[in-house]
Image (cartoon, rainbow, N blue to C red; front, side, top):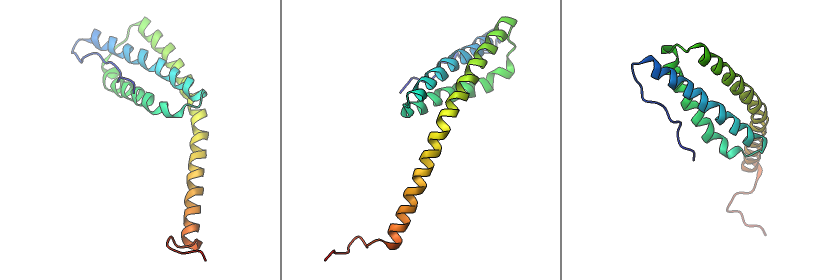
Length: 129
């Protein structure tokens, strides 16, 4: 399991929140890049932990970003990071959704088989002669 995202302590000063806002974006971008690498390698099991870390940073951004004003260089950096995050997220989504659809289809098929077996199969205690 990966450690949770490091977040600067909350403070009333705007400079601290500016730094924290940028820190969150700086965390999310490499997390989405790692998720993309794992999705390309079809290592689906590691994605939920990384997604949880991303979600934590995004939730923190929702709290602090409306209270922050970024300077011009920070805004430019934020735009670059958002572009990377968006591109990574789109590619991950395009790889994960077909896998999810396959999983749902397999689960439906198993449920149908189970229902048919229950309706028409032999009882568990039946003896073959």
